[in-house]
Image (cartoon, rainbow, N blue to C red; front, side, top):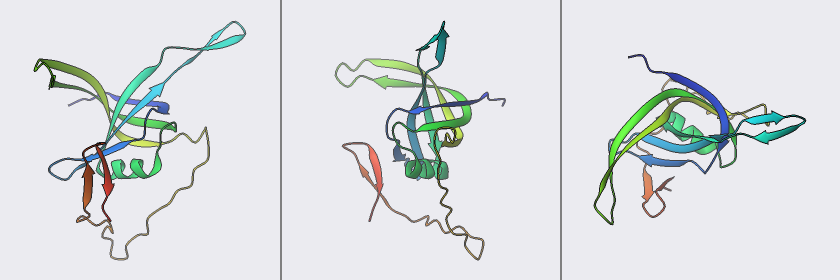
Length: 151
């Protein structure tokens, strides 16, 4: 299947939110805004803002959660997907079909044209096996829909 790929820079609109699927996959949602600057004579004005819903999976989700905050300038590359689902209204029971473009990020990083960053690499295991603990437990705070690593 030939999926369109997109790359863009923008600013993170809110702190990223991590959730875990029933099968254990880590999924991180964030929203990124891009606003072009338009020259009008000697002045500059803001153009219309485009909003992108970005989804990161597993290791990328964990790294983005540790590295990116609201307001950060980021560079995103990913697959442009059209997601369709039914969304019931809790009060009225009316079901509305939602048809939304999202970006499944394959790469996401801080925009180094804006500021410097320091890379923190995890130590490489001597035996070549990942040191990430697959049995790590996570606690879900259902009130705010955020996930925090359990102590």
